[in-house]
Image (cartoon, rainbow, N blue to C red):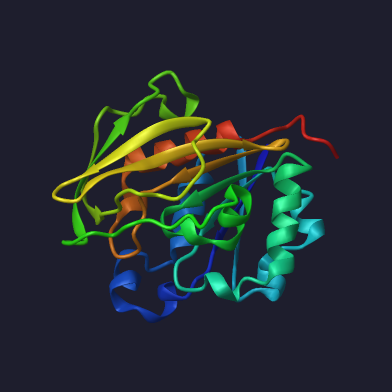
Length: 228
């Protein structure tokens, strides 16, 4: 079994009506729901509401891959939790997948060593085409090229990240330029994947192709041979 932890700050999921309308059970539970349909995956969830953000040494020692979604609560994640995650990725080989606004999460910035800042040009929300740049990559397996997303928050360059080890996807937004939307890295013994789609007010994680990419990324980021 691949043991996955889906982490979400769970702030807008509770307080913002347009988010609740799209994810009435919470974004983390939506993601956990489609991942749990795979017989090889065991999923748990955690949020800022949990003691220690739901993250402990004992918990992470049992986890193969973490999915991380954050937006307005990045600063509420304690630094000791960030270091715990970092050590499990780099030294133990745990995979981590950072979703959408988690480009600015403390753990992603720690792993990248840069500001991870980006641009959000007007009109802000627009149609997206996600182009596969590495069709032979495991994360891109079975994904149409391009993948159309009806509406999403437009990101554009410059995206202050290191040169990806593998740039799997590039995003093109109507009227707002292009963006490195699927970037894969190796950090120590672990793997890191940043995946851009996932604005909280749109049903991105209900879209089958997005679910398939995230599932592919879980398999790619899993490292069963990591040190114990």
